[in-house]
Image (cartoon, rainbow, N blue to C red; front, top):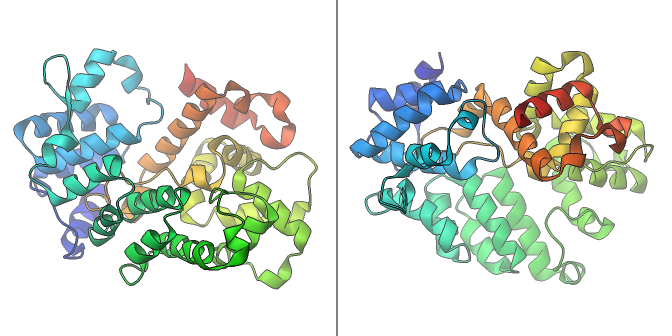
Length: 351
């Protein structure tokens, strides 16, 4: 079924999305289907073999999968560092070369993705990614430009070029930061800042996405939402009804959908505490948003989110965070943040 959906979606992709050479190779499509089924052992060696044959699509996707890895899945953990380099990179003596660098010489898409790594303050790179339909990576680049106070560059690159909700939200915030006196005082804050001033800038679009009317919440509830967004809601803080309604809403938007599916499948009996702990471990919506299609031109985001790969990558991302900060899965952090079932899932992935 995944393979049939992939074929139909690839045919229906808009003309602006450059389709790299080799994307229609049946072997590549079979490997993509296996990857979306969370089968690393079947898919990754197949991508590597195609990349060595010169399949540009495989080179781009394999490189991007490598870049997005936060923690190895069960099969990847069995490989040595040398085997991982052989799997994900082009053999080049002592210094294996990224397949993305190889593909950049022959693909506009690969060149733009490569530029997003090394020319991340260039507004032209942002515009290229938007034109190619790579809105996820474009949003990450736009956020980095915001951190450097490049507000006008963000607005110029996004305005009139896309209707992607996340990019439009970033452009709206950039306009506020660029034009208003209140925003001027907040320029040093990050996009996910939880202070009241920054939250007031972001609240209208946030509530609209969640389907909550602005008149339904008071100032205390705004603080509650800020804590929930950041994934750091402390025990006993604020209005429990607002918090629960907010977390329930998050399960229905893209950022929370993969975590919700993971909890429903693995921890159905403790879904609420699983989801709450997952939000905390992942680092809130901004952390969950890092899970997504490595290359939207090759794997549309909706197809990725509907696959078995999305919850698998979510678990790997949480394991990566827990590996760096072991206290994240410690029950002593508080009952509200801890779910035995999810903790066991993460701990198993860390072995």
